[in-house]
Each structure stands twice: as C-alpha cells, then as structure tokens.
Image 1 (cartoon, helix red, strand yellow):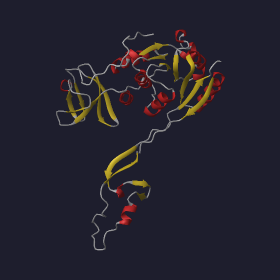
Image 2 (image 1 turned 90 degrees about the vertical axis):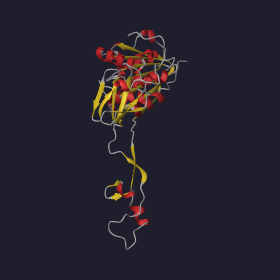
Image 3 (image 1 turned 180 degrees about the vertical axis):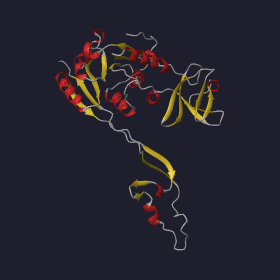
Image 4 (image 1 turned 120 degrees about the vertical axis):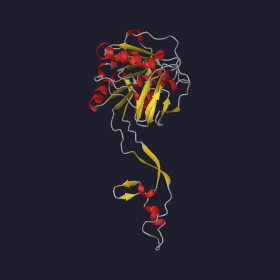
Length: 311
C-alpha cells in the first residue's frame, strides 16, 4: 500500500494559489488541466495567458490574454477532471459514474474497494462520495499506472481519502486485512469472474458489488459466478443523449431529413400575397433544443449484485 494522510478531508479553497491545479475551459469540449506556476504562461489559439494574473482570483473567473481572447479558470471537480484527465486507459464517463455511485449506495463514511484504477476517473468521484470520513482502496497491477494515479489524486486534493495499491486482484485477490470491511466493491477487469470470490469475502453483509465489462460475454460469465453467493443480479447499459440549446429561427432547425421544425409556424403565418420573395416569413427568433450530432454510444455493461445474507 502507498501511504495516506490521516487528515481525511478534501483539500479545497475558493481562490487560486501558486501550485494549484485549475481546469482551463475554452469551450464545452475543450478543457485542459494546468498547474499554476507564477512564472509560467499558457499559450493557445486565444493568445498568451500569464499565470501570475490568475493567482488570487476566485475559481470560475474569466481571464483575458494579450490578444483579448479569454478562458475560464475552473476548480478541478470530479466531473471536470473526468473530461480533462490524461487517458492512460479507457475511462468511465459521467453517466456511468453517476449510476455506479447511486446503485452501490455509496454515502459519506463508506469504505469502497476498487480494482482497475486505470486513469482514476471513477476513483476521484468515489473519494468525494465517501468524504469526509470514508475511504477508497484502489488497486492496479501496473505499478507505473498506479503511481501516476496517486500523483493525480494529490493534484486534485483527494489523496487523503484514497489508498493506492499495486496488486493483481485477478490472481491474488484483495488483501486479507480488508476482510468483511467493505460496503461496496467495484471491478473493472478483463476477467472479473476470477476476482468475484475474493470480493465477496471483503464485503459486509448485504454489501454490493459492481462489475464493468465492455463485452456481453464477460457479463454472462460474471453473472454465472455471482449466482453462487450473490442475489439481485442486474445488468445495465447507460446511454446518454445530449441536446444543443441555441437561439434561431424555427425553419432553420431540421428535425428529419427533408422536413423542418418551422414548417408548422410558416403554415400558420403565411406572408401576404403582396410580400416580396425576400421578406421574412414572420417567425420570430426563439430558443430551441435539438439532439447533438455527436453522441457517445456503447461504453460498457454495469452488472450489480448484492451479497447474500448468511443466517
């Protein structure tokens, strides 16, 4: 195990200081994690930004470059960190993470085990969910990946809530000193069925396990193993559909190929017979929403199961 700070609280303050991690927000799909250094600058398409001018400003501030361009400086919340972190492995995104935290019934004070630290996307959200008195023990078989994740937890201020271990959970199982202590276990492994027996021993009575698998064959084999000591086995696939909200004319938003949302408006209010061809139809600008053209599809299957109570 790597050592942890006994003061179990998320370190966070409202104003930016030298050495802080900030999320530089350019637009909804372009963000970057930057460590503030008094003598450093950030260069992007909007110009040059001096870190010195960031220090002392509250998180959420809008700052300007030498060219008049601007970005926003945001706090590294788990939601934003998931969108900005370095991908050492495939990660879980917001929809899956929210579902996992809810279905594992994670609340402040819980002890959670995770195998498959990866890039630490889920771990960061788990740490916030168990704060201030809970703890997350996360394991990865790859030593360098585990060390990189620990550095990220220190940068985001959750290191006091997370213990990172280097261990092959599929081959060795979870450490014996955690027997019967876990409220929840999360597995993100290529062969999760190999770790399920050990995970069951770590859980408290009525504890919950979740396994994330990209392939349905993994789900089938895991479910077979779970059926021996677990009950209430359920599998979900979470698909998120985002919408774009903008102001425009009804006729300019296409809902189907060859048809438009604005057809009804223009039928109700036709221009007079004497109106010129270039005259407006009379449909006023309005705020509208439509499905985004880019939607994230299948990420994986989430299988949940509750440990059977021994009477």
